[in-house]
Amino acid sequence: MSRSKYTALEVEQGLHAVALSSGNIPRALKLLAEQDAEIPESTLREWVGKTHAERYSRVCDEVLPRVYGAMAQQSEDAAMRLAEVETQLAERMSEESDNLKAGEVAGALRNVTVAKAVNVDKASLIRGRPTAITERRDASELLRSLASRFSGMVKVDNLAERGKDAQDAITISAPASEDVNAQD
Image (cartoon, rainbow, N blue to C red):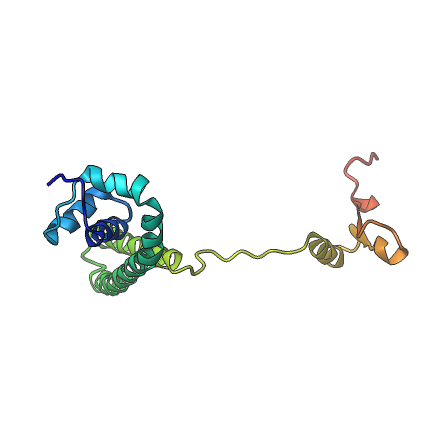
């Protein structure tokens, strides 16, 4: 049905369907069809991109956290199911180790383990949890640590203590006895 006037409720329904579909218009059309709402694709695109773009943006801000929350929950549920399968496969591998063809259960176990890890990682990403842990250290702290471990080779001089502008001066030297360029 192609028409020029839609009620505010129909516009909201269309914008919500697109937001719930993460911007995928064909998927939004299927959602709308399930609700017996007929809004043409071109009309949805016009609303989302031009006529109701600001409202669509606000709808996305309201709807997407719920969509991503559901996606994260699905990933976590899948990871839990995969963990159970992983345990079953490991037990089976242990029980049937003498009768297994090389790689059969081991390959299945590897695939399930990787799938589980991917689901845990994606759920963490969606929920804003860290997916990697990175340590950051100050360079002067690292140099002081090196100097304490290799006192004969690395020396850190704190120039600030002597009223200089630079914070630290570093001297790296090789002991004379280990000089590889020394000649007999």
